[in-house]
Image (cartoon, rainbow, N blue to C red; front, side):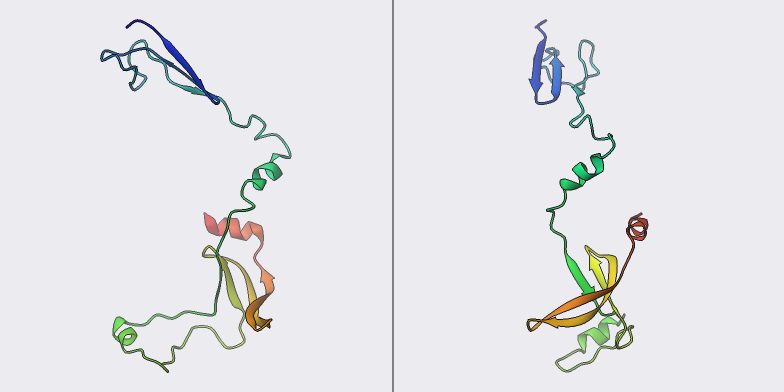
Length: 137
């Protein structure tokens, strides 16, 4: 019962002592117990030039890009009356640039083009990175 067990897993050291029920599991606040101490996973994470290394981790994360030509608000009554051939008026003028959204965040404006018989968008204005970060907050 009075034995201390020490385990090392990766970058984590755990020191435990059996508690009253003999399991060695507790909150760490009991007498004779210590909290787990974790080492930094990347001690150089705050070193100059580490921003590029940290960015490398997320470069292959998929994001959703969508284009918005406009929007409007209608009542549920009018929504239920829609059928084939109905026209919904949007808030954007014809010829106005479309919004380009990445995961719902505005990143650019552009115009519709056709590429190999598919729709595409030519970017005409890109929102600065500082503006994008400001909108996230």
